[in-house]
Image (cartoon, rainbow over all chains, first blue to last red; front, side, top):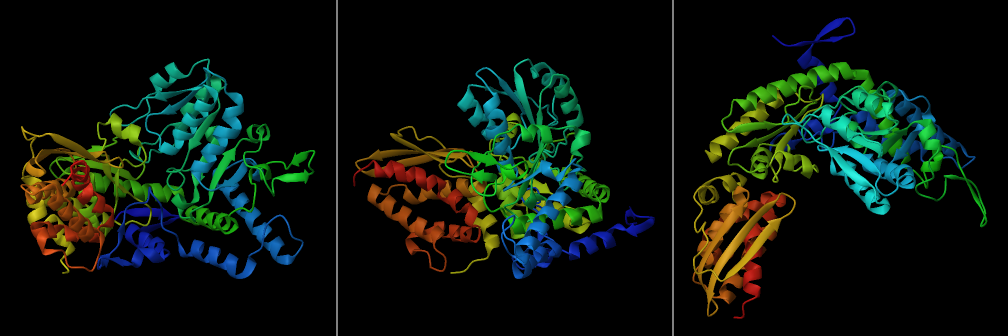
Length: 420
Length: 144
């Protein structure tokens, strides 16, 4: 019998529901190497629904003009659409005001902005920044850089064998010199979901601000920045069915208002003379130059798309896929799943005894199954598990089907048979 | 010569991956170089006993994927007994084969033909070249 998901008051057959979602993504019907594509690399980037592709295309076909500048009709339309996208992001994150939403290129740029504009002026030699052992390189390297610039020290909260954040160590490391905590909401390499509320509560008690890397969470886990009580939350549009090149920095108003501009240029200033320049208020102070207008519009549409399906239904379906895939590959000899946290998002990292992750990836690719192999830009996490060569990783989105999971499991079994 | 991409993990490459030849450090080795791929942590050490410009013995060690391991195994067999110039010629022909589509591999490559299939997996070309990179640094140091 098929699993039923609840949609409103109607019980809908899961396969029918997923087929409907899937139909909205043109790329999912293409063939690769003569076979239907099975796209299981959603943690690297997600595919785009027709609504997003059309919104970007429509902007260039009908509304294209620069924002916040012209008096003419098109400029007004472009500005309205751009600012409406900001409001959509605000609603999606449950932020207090659209001024707390800064458009950037992606999560990486958002973290660099906070490192340079918030952390750097604050830090003195001997101060500490806390990250976890399962961070993506983008939530490590910007902090290393600001540490080098200021003499501050990067401290690392360990993870346990399941790939879970170790709270006892966190409490021990959270000290009088801690100036910032920067942690991932969902680990891209392991799938672990971090209890952000608990992290911020402990930090708040000591007056320490918290940045959350939400790149892997945004399309899979409901995010309420006020309930999480984080100071900064960052994510990339392309990981939540939006375009590449657009992302978001959410910052609490009082934090952002106290921060100096990061990049300087047009659109972020009120008046300029050669003697003095008066900066714009937030969010524009942090958006120097012409922004990615179509990207922001596309992102707004992508978030609406997610909301229309609903994150609870998405989580239910992805959990089912993860469980089926995990149980399926665990039956294959020599498989070890890396990342066995109690709370996991739809990410399945694994290794096979005696078989290199790249060979797993190439053999699956032959069957038109796209997965990621390697260290997933989380080399310290891979070192923790003694896997410098990394893992093979399948990552799911709501448009993946049970049939695709079966093809994936068959593919992994074929890898085993080839190398047996 | 178009081959089925499936061949990459069948036949000779798989056979050399499972039972690599010259997977050892030759006792008389007097040259050593490492081929490394920092992206995946793979590394292959190539050990050569080079006497009067001739590869008298060659072996390898290290951790890598199947493609790099089989490539190292076949490479050691192919260059054993050649002089440095002959080794460099083979290296050039191998590089040309994996890097260029639509050409017939040079007959001199023999069993190394199997790696023509790697062209269907562009991200894996560097795996096939890993041991050859190490050999290249050994041979560059040697006149002749």
